[in-house]
Structures are given as C-alpha cells and as structure tokens.
Length: 390
Ligand SMILES: Cc1cc2nc3c(=O)[nH]c(=O)nc-3n(C[C@H](O)[C@H](O)[C@H](O)COP(=O)(O)O)c2cc1C
Image (tube, rainbow, N blue to C red; front, side, top):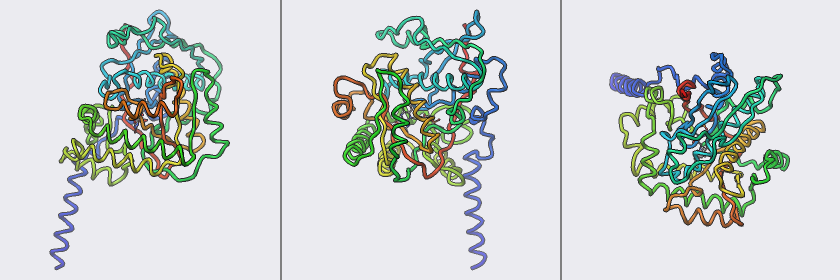
C-alpha cells in the first residue's frame, strides 16, 4: 500500500514538473521588463524615455500598434503612427479601437512628461486626416500625432505612479458600489465638450448593460473569423510570451501562481483547450462571471465619431483608468457590443439608441469596481521595436 501511494505521489510530481517545464516557468520574463520603473532610464533620448512609458498603456487586443518616428531635425519632437501591420480588422473593421489605442498611448506620454520635466505639445493629425478610402496606406503615410517636448521643471503628477500598474483587471470585483465622491471625480476628469464620461450603478442600468455585454459576447463567440483573430495571437507559454511580447496569454484571465504553470503547460500540450468551441464557451462563461461581479459600468461617449474624437477618447480612457487606480478602483473594457462588424449590428444599434441618443458614439464600455484580486502585468515589446527610421 505504502509503495503504491509513494509511486502515485512520484507520478503526480513528475506530471506537475513536466507541465511547469513545458510552461517555461523557469524562463526570465523579458516581456515584463518595460514595466520596471527604471526601464526608461536606460535610454538617454527623452523621447524614447517617454515612448517607453506610452508603451504601458491599455491597447486593443494587446497588439501595441504604435510606431514612432524620431524627428531628425528636432531632437525634441517625434511622430506617432498607427502600425497598420498590427490591425485587427475582423473585430475592429473601422479601426476605431485602433485610434482609441493611439490616444491611450499619448495620454501616458503626456503624464510621464509632466512628471519627468517635459511639457508635451500634442498635435493630432499634423499632416492631415486619413484618406478613409485607403486607410492602411494613410496610416503608413500620415502620423496620428506630432509630439513636441519642452524642458520644464518636473511637476509631480498624481497619476504617474499608476502608469506602472496593470490596466485591465478581468477578475471578479467586490459588490461595493462607488461613492458619490468617487463618481464625481471620475466623471469630471473630462474637460472636452465633445466627450463625456457616464457612470451607472443603479439596478435598471446595471441589468441593461450586463445584458448587452452578455448578448454581444454570445454573438462574438459565434463569429469564427473574430475568434480566430484572437486565437492566433494567444501565447500559450513563457517561451512564446518572450518571443512575441504582444497578444493574449493565460495570466490575462487572472490565473496566477502554481495554477498559471499548470494551465500554460496544459494549453501548450493540448492547444484545442483554447481553440474553437472551447474558446467560445470560455469567452461566454468569463463574460457572465465578469458581469455577475460588477458593481458599476462607465461609458465614454463622443458627440461625433471623427478620428480625432476617437484618439481623444483613448486619452480620456487612460486618464479614467489612472484616476480610478488612485481611488483603488480597477476596470475592464467590454467592447463587444460597440464593435462594427455586421453580426453585431443589433446590440450596437440598441446600446447606442439607449445610451447615446442624438447620434453620439459610445467609444468605451467598461466594468469597474474594487478588485478582489490583483491583475498581472501583460506582455510588452521592447521600446526600440517601436522606433522606425525616417
Ligand atoms: C479600445 C480597447 C478595447 C478593449 N476591449 C477589451 C475587451 O473587450 N475586453 C477585455 O477584456 N479587454 C479589452 N481591452 C483591454 C486590452 O485587452 C488590454 O489593454 C491589453 O490586453 C493589455 O493589457 P493591460 O491593459 O492589462 O496592460 C481593450 C482595450 C482598449 C484600449
């Protein structure tokens, strides 16, 4: 009996050890280096230092679709381009989320600039707007923004420290509602007359918004090309995470510690666990779990849906996340009902009818609340991968 038990114990140990090795848990996670507060200090050029902070911003599908051209004539200026090689056009056919993602980056640059002694003048679309008929070409040729730095006295920015915290928390939140003071602080971060932040936590709106989120997740789970787009950028283990440094991974769903090693080992050995029907079911299940543990929702709404308003909505979203972090509140976007592909038309129209009457566009729908569990930092590329030559 004793021999049988100890052989069983040894077998279990071997299985776990194998899963950990397959998962690559003993690899150094190079993809986390940019999160280190001292990372940017490795660079002499203040522009690269600020770009290293921008790189930490929230971004659609963690594609990090940013390209930066340093101005050769002005050592204090750079251009931000949307990286058209990193488009996710199945889920984001109009590249709206792509533009929001340019804005999240710019706000991080601005805040980091203030803290480290650089005022940043941000001019959107300095060489004119995109030609929508040849969007990809336009993204290659026309910058989203020109950022010009001016040296000034560093000013402590209360939001700066939160740049180094994970932006997205997909775990369960506490049921505690936000206080009126917290709602006021979050709703009043916006100073742009064309944008608004609206927070809902009453039962009627909670039920309605949760219902939109679930219905939209069910639709998305059934759209093969959209699910495939996410599947392709899923990094199953530490080796892949270090190789690609962008996309999704197991830890993004809130798995940590020993379970992370086990799950990564399992999806590496059995990729079907995260593909096709299994992935669709998991997506619906996790959306249900998310909305069931959500005390409040926030919407960012713009009066028009111009490219500039999309970028500015991203800037506002970064400010919203960072302000929320200061208040001990975390967020997760639930973007599905806002997406423009044909199968999503019904929820898209209904949610806009209910929450943006009069022709506005809902740029972001996010759940928010006090976390039960900390989120993990997600993969980030090396900052020098973003820099392109003239
Ligand atoms: C425009 C936009 C849309 C997003 N939509 C979703 C979403 O629908 N669901 C989700 O879980 N995260 C969403 N995110 C969060 C990103 O997936 C996340 O920022 C990225 O994976 C990097 O992770 P981090 O924010 O924790 O650093 C979105 C982010 C942006 C900027």
